[in-house]
Length: 332
Image 1 (cartoon, rainbow, N blue to C red):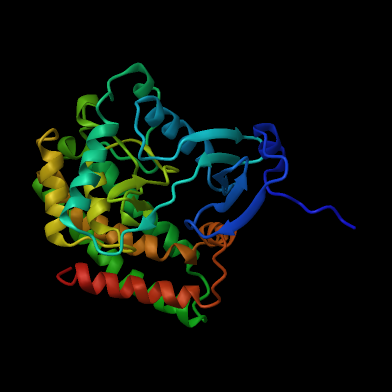
Image 2 (image 1 turned 90 degrees about the horizontal axis):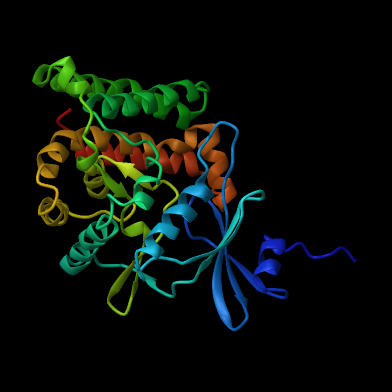
């Protein structure tokens, strides 16, 4: 009889979990995740996605960021317990929470407080050693270029226009997304000189950011929020953090809730609201592109890795992107 293959077996054994019980769970769209029972406790085992076209070390980023947060005494995030970098596995403590189904003002306040907490010691040596966030931007020009890159990579991917979904995505890109980008680019160029667009934020103006921050990565335990998923975390423009929080479509916040979040951050980040207001339409456009990620082979493989095997996912994502554009960018 063939031996049963246990994911991350050597890592689990080194940790002392010799006969664990594993249950595959859906907990995100980038990594394979298992709930592990053993030693009288519950753990989370993650296997991170790797692709030759994606240079990001997701394991090192998340494990390192969580190690920093735990060293600062934060208890509302997973505790990193062990890692097997060679094979892409990491073991974390388990958080027995539930998703937030109705977002209340206290949830927004807790979320903003969490951002303040993780930045309390951002000038320390340990904090300075953390990397930049995924797709970090420190100038207005970089924000523009990041979105332009997404549009260009999507255009390259949409080659099979005999497929109805691909044709629909191409039409959305050509007739709406590109023209919107050009208009936003022209507006920024009209308002600012080339020098201003390329001017980078001082270190004191940057923050440590979870990056993919929103209620899709938050659990509630006895009225207290716990925060998950730091694969993209690192140093970034705080306005980008606010724009992504306001734009995230999976568990959306209202306009008023995003203002509450921004107002609480502005107590210690005085210029965040003005900069975020300037960039928000650009980030709404970026999220239209993110919703179309599955049309890119690399991103589609990442979804399959995480267990997303929908046969109609392209059609579903196209509809989401079309709806999102009509909701948030109708004037463009």
